[in-house]
Image (cartoon, rainbow, N blue to C red; front, side, top):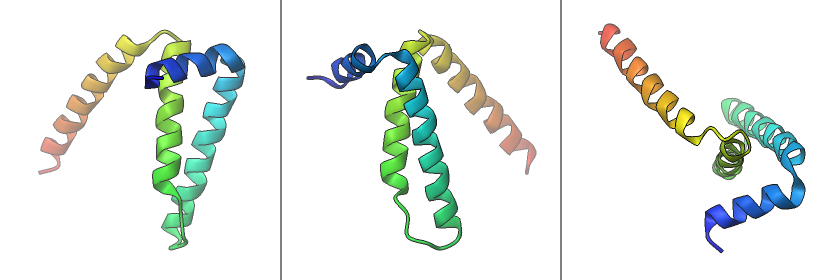
Length: 88
């Protein structure tokens, strides 16, 4: 199965509400790993980033906002670029 098919099937199998809660859980796990790293402890940041990215893709599908997310991403990166230019 292709990635998109797997994500679609997960949403259909478990439902929107369950996947939304799982996204929250995965973000919390990433937060925990980032805290571990900041304290010099062993961490699983790459694994948790991957989990969060998968869940973000599912949230885009659930809320039917893929295009809007891409537009906001471009806007926010450009805004950051402008802020960085002002830092000089």
